[in-house]
Image 1 (cartoon, rainbow, N blue to C red):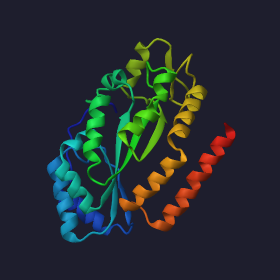
Image 2 (image 1 turned 30 degrees about the horizontal axis):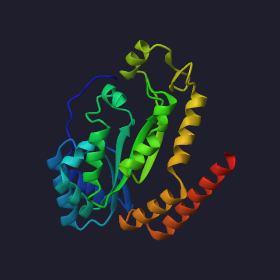
Image 3 (image 1 turned 90 degrees about the horizontal axis):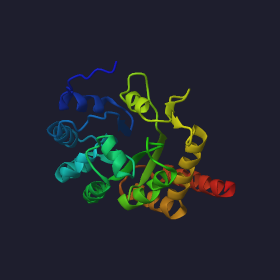
Length: 246
């Protein structure tokens, strides 16, 4: 309800006991605070290894995980093959306003450290951040390539009832939340933002990128080869279709 609460995490043994009961071979740990206690992360990895749990995990982490290379290596050994990290923008002014705790230069250094472990890295970006123009939004694709992310996800800026973002929208001239809770302006209505997002996506996902993704999925042991082949041809079809539309 918009209120801050003190964080408390389940014990490492409790988490691992649940993982043992799950039949799925691929598990996405949906917990933005998974690495809030880095010692607990290490305990979870140690228990997974000790119990002989052979599963593949994906997990959402903050960029600060780059400060713990030994933990990243242990996570990989425990089966954490995919990291998802929110970068959000390619603009320092936006990262500062979001209080992300890093700028673009620091992000490049952090991902260089993360890439030393053969983890599959998926980055999240927001299209339509307040104060960004079209040229700045389109810089997402080249920035993501400089970071050498494996894949990216592009979302439009949204708000919700109790979000502190509403105060920023109210103070930003020309901006509002539309009926879909997407933050828009007179210059950048939802349709234009979706078009920009499409252009970023097609700029990033070219054929060489798809081939690189396929290789990384194999080396990082993210998915099996039959599923990889199916995914590859789907992505290739989408690229061909998008080029046809352009």
